[in-house]
Length: 254
Image 1 (tube, rainbow, N blue to C red):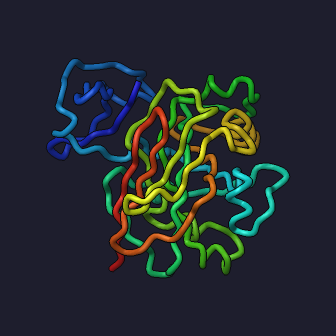
Image 2: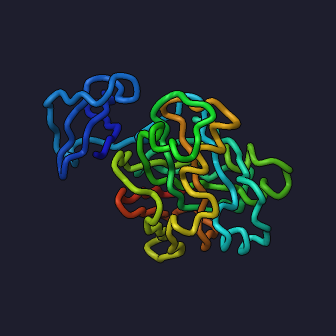
């Protein structure tokens, strides 16, 4: 099932995507369950926005693909390398992303995002599926120059617009071996699979929940395959994940 967040006539609502239509839901599916109202709209008549604005946090995992770590001259960490992005970094599908004035080296990173469905702590890896609501596409944008100079990643990965998510949340998906591709202005630049992760989705949920209480709507970013590069003013980046869809954003600079 695909759960989207839509806007029609300036009114936001959650919906189930069924082919070329959306079926409006009653309330917030993270707290009220999935309750279709029966009201239908053509998909082309609504504007898709970020399928989730995390209630508390986005937990990223760095260097979780060996070839990506190598291409940046980094060693693979012995345990998952975690960082935060604020919820103010989230933008949705089709929204323009304004490149930050403090950086001249913003890099795209196509990633599988895990959306948490219920409050949880210390989740065993074998029980991870019990707390996952679904999956969406993410672009873990990184200001490489700030990442090098700051000594920590808050500014490099947390600026407004640094976390495009979308186009919707797929609730029925096996995340273990999904094709993941990123295109820059239509040119294929990343071509990987979630099977290449050093730590799989279940292990990442266990690691994150061992460190932090996870709340409904929290998002985990699972790392990016090799092929990252810089994005410039006027360029367009598309992240496509098998079984989910495509997240596309245009980049601008004032």
